[in-house]
Length: 125
Image (cartoon, rainbow, N blue to C red; front, side, top):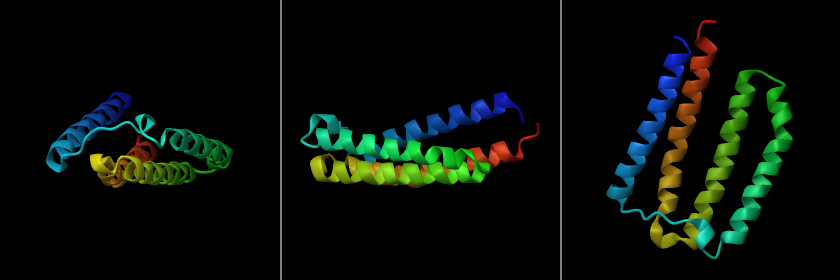
């Protein structure tokens, strides 16, 4: 399976995520709220920046090892980022219930990362 199949997999995965988000928003009655429009705007910016800086500090260690080390870097980074995001959504936009979607999508994204890594490890060439 070549690059075309891999790109099709990525586009298909993105389409599934978007469709699932649409369905879950309707089913769970979740309103879309931007944290930047709430009282938590400053905390969100600082928190995202801090998570990014810490992630960039650990990135060279992740790049120096096997692809599995890089996978674990992205999993840990995404888990920390998602929990931070969900906490702020819960604290500053509780009525929108956006935090539920953030937490529901976390395992799906991790599975998607695992599938991408498995695909790239086992692809010929």
